[in-house]
Length: 249
Image (cartoon, one colour):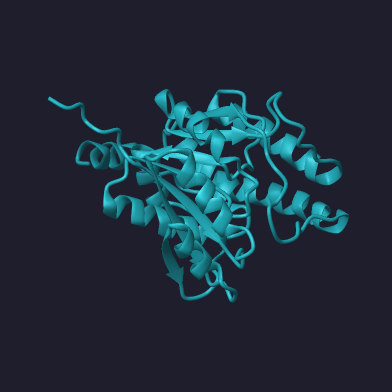
């Protein structure tokens, strides 16, 4: 009797005008592990993002206009549920998330519903300064208290989810700025999902230009605090709903 094959993992890549990098990122992911299926959510791109992703071997879900990372990920979670994936992981299409770390982040799901690939956990040389650093430290402290575990990088988009977390995300996964990181995480925790983090190293963007500058960093500080306060007012998903959906899966 042959052993059962390992379950397949859905790698979700939100992409907006990432034609320069998405093809290489998809190929890297597919080369890393044969269990990975890549879904590129083309978030209203006006360049050749979709064509590059298809040529590299990804399935592409085209959104009619730009919804932002939150909207793209929500579409990805719906796709995952429809096709029966029990585990998914978000990977940036610009190549900053090292595909060789995907298995490490997924391993965190052995004892938590959400696993975060953390940049500030004694691994790698990723650094931020000024208002952006202050905001990240404040957010990490507050959300660590909510999660009852130490978290150092709650704004990381390099995160994995199991079936329980996917179910909760489908009930609440906001599209507004920082909603895909702060808001979604806070509501998931308040809804009963457990969270862990795994130290990872981040790479430089493989294409395009970073958007950070001092003015935007200051704006980020204000918006992140507002996003946290807003998230704390959200109504959590009823645990019974998550449990019932998980049992029926």
